[in-house]
Image (cartoon, rainbow, N blue to C red; front, top):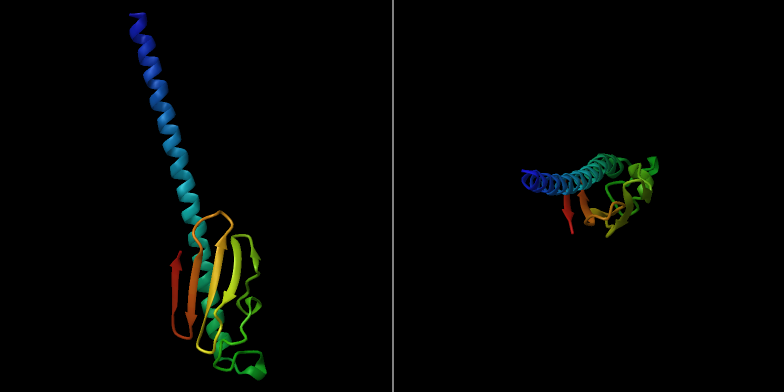
Amino acid sequence: MGQQQLLLAILVTIIVGIATVVAINTMIDARDENYSDQIKNELIEATSLARAYYQRASMLGGGGKSFANIELVHLNLSQNHTLGLFEITNRNQDNFEITVTPSFGGDIIVATITSSEITIDEE
């Protein structure tokens, strides 16, 4: 009888260990997904500010129907954000891209912003 109890204790220990590893991996995945969602929310907020910049006349500090001179400060973003490194790339009159390298080490996120839409891709 003692040998069966010992085997049962070992089996329970193995099952609890496996369940703990699975739970930790699930929590890490959920955390990374949460960070990714927060970055996407920041990009959506930046889109509304970018549209306002685009529509505002250049003599009032806007773009005058152009994204050519837009900067992170116009989007209420800083380059070294707590969520990652934000950079404006591929700037032109009709659109621009914001490239985000997440601080948690996930995929690079690229948002293409025009005067009428946003497209977010993960690379």
